Length: 62
Image (tube, rainbow, N blue to C red; front, top):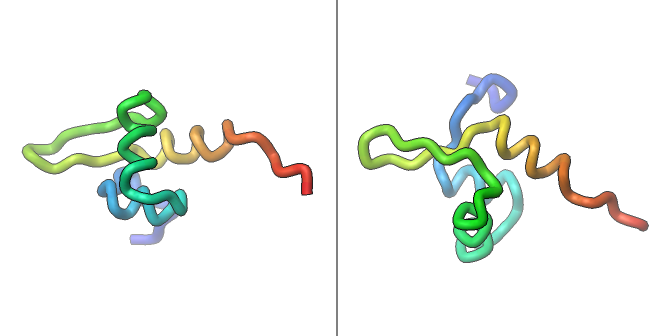
């Protein structure tokens, strides 16, 4: 499955995709920045919410 068709990411995958550390990622989760889903005891972040978050970041001036 390609990353373009992946619907859900585990927290470690989402952290890597965003390039943030563990504590910053969970700070963003607590702030409601992502759509978090549970399947049993597993936690997932939706691909769409990761995309929305990345697109909401300000563009670099450089």
